[in-house]
Image (cartoon, rainbow, N blue to C red; front, side, top):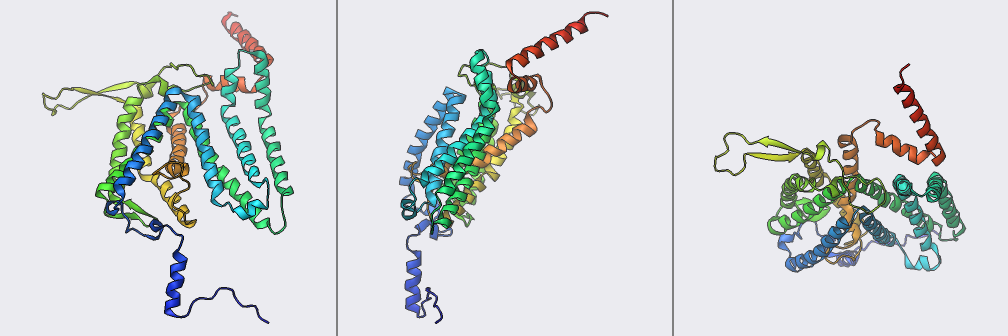
Length: 423
């Protein structure tokens, strides 16, 4: 006897109509639209705006406090954001019925998460940790050994998790378990790839973290308000509330803001100086040509009553324009990608931890794209290429033991003395 297909498409018009109604149930209204629900036509837009504004004030206040406290506190903020993002993404494909049959399986996700965190932050902060403990010989030897074997430790931690996963495999649950295993690794790649670049930007100078992150916030706020008051033309089908008016208005606002904010931020050594260790003290350094003001005389056709005869521009302001262009034109596609991702899973937001905004992941979609670009741009077009004294010293502290460093110091001293003594 031939097995029949369990799915039957309704034949009569009334049955087909009921079928379509049932298929649309559970899908949020704004996901069904394809451009009709613009903010300018939204009856509840003022209530939504007040909720978003209230949440934004709290977020900006917390962000400003972290910036004031310094590099380590900013990094701690990034870690907290990572944990919230991972939790939201882990829950996206979670099935309660299957998880009840697999006790401890959710703990495996977090085991891999913190193993990846130890690996990424260990690689990023190892040199700065060594620089912090150089005055204590015992602690220095301990940290140096930890840094030396950190990769091996992480590898065996991962292998232990891999064996844990194999031992938890359960009959009739293989597909779900392997799907969760793959989903966990994709989350680790997404979360830690961007965060590693973010932390690297922080220690290169808070300026290279603060300016790109602020530009994304400005672009997001400007796009919201331009679309709120003037949005009429849908921008992209995958994100129905985005409009051309909001996109263009936000782009102009972001580029102008980039040029002006770079001039303001570039005058504070707390923001521009790189951090070479994990201390929390105040920073002072030579600003270098990038943050040194250059004077430009205004052209002769400027009226005599104009109060300024010359303007000062920092060289970094020209780099800021490039960051502004990327933040306003390319980075929003991270948001479009997230919108498409949410449509695929038929959800409105990744979470509800921020009233009016959704989840942490909803706020970080463009930031992830921007953080990677900022680091690549800084390393490619801003940092001087080649071997420097600081890079050599960093390698010595990282790779040589204390006794080897003393031997190197003695040999270099002898070589310099031989050069100074005439033959």
